[in-house]
Image 1 (tube, rainbow, N blue to C red):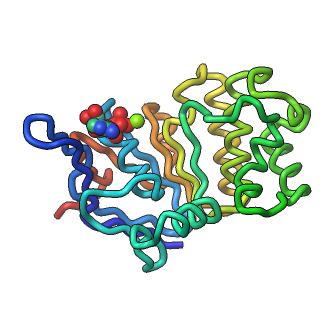
Image 2: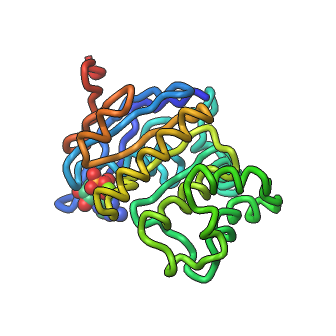
Length: 227
Ligand code: ADP
Ligand code: MG
């Protein structure tokens, strides 16, 4: 799947309160790419990821998935598209506290009125080292385990692309390292596209293409894409 953002902008507020969170971002992501995005706090990283994944709408600009402008879909179509084609991993895990690990993982399928593929769920759990934790509630799991459950949830519908917004930001360096290693292995094994925001230069360096964002302006390292 080919993703193309053209002059994507997001402006919050107006007048004195106006914030240009993202300024005419041009970006193309190809099937199988592993890209990283670095930038200081408040530079527009989350805004960019939310726009690229259809979680939010831009003030102007377009975004196409295989030539189809996803912002032209209605809310229902876009939600279904997101559930089936896009996986999203949040810094705060965002697991539902009253559901067990396996119920959390299955949730995107249930929302689509589909049954999760049991074998695939077990394979994911094994790859992520959470097989023995599937019947536990989130509060019975460590931070690293919770994030691994969230990764399985992002993958259960077999999406083409995974977006991750500082997935190791709430973890100590050991669990963060484990989470990244598993994410990297799964990406390679399953040939997924991965776009990850990080503060960690070591993680950014693992990517094939590295982007930096400053004051809402994105540039690709080693290439001046604004020329
Ligand atoms: P990052 O993820 O790099 O820390 P964000 O994308 O969250 O940055 O934010 C970029 C800028 O947009 C910041 O100045 C932030 O304060 C502003 N911003 C983000 N969301 C909103 C919002 N809902 N309303 C107003 N300003 C916002
Ligand atoms: Mg952010």
